[in-house]
Image 1 (cartoon, rainbow, N blue to C red):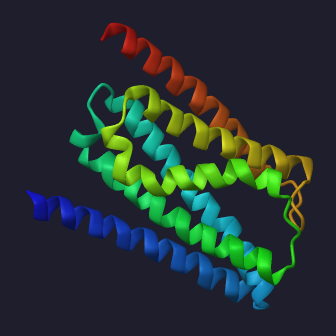
Image 2 (spheres, rainbow, N blue to C red):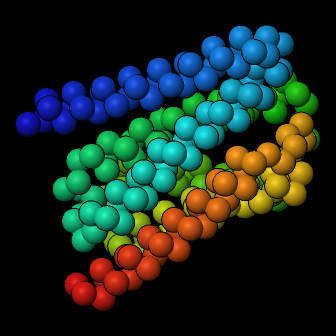
Length: 190
C-alpha cells in the first residue's frame, strides 16, 4: 500500500515538475532575455500553483469530515502545491533580482507568512485542528486575492491588468464563498 501511495505522489510530482519545466522553456523561447524569461516564468508558474491550490481547497471541502491524514490524494496535492510554490518563489525572486524591482517590506509580510504556511503545511496540516486548517486555506486564498487585486490595480511593476487576473479573482472569491458555505453546513451536521 505504501509503495502505491509513494508511486502516485512520484507520478504527480513528475507531472508538476514537467509543467514547471515547460513553463520555463516556453518563457525562454518566447522571451529569451533572462530578465523577461524569469518574469514570465514567475507569472505562469504562479498560475499552475493557483490551479493546484484550488484543487487542494476543493478536495479538502468535498472530502470533509474525512481527516487530511486519511485522504492520501489531498495529502499528495498539498505536498505538490508546496513544491511547486517553492519553484514559483525561485522564479519570482530571480525576476525581482534581474529586473531590479523595488520591494516594500511591509507589503511582503503577508506573502512571507503565506509562503511559510505553504511550506510547512505538508508536515503539520494533518495534525492540527479544523480551525487551523481553515486558517491555512483561507489565509492563502486571501493572499492570492490581494495579489490579483494588486495586479488589476496595476500595482505590479511590468505587469498590466489582464483578463486572466479578473477571472482568477472571481474564481478565488467564488470558491472561498462556496467552499465556506459547504464546510459550514457539513460542520453543523457533524
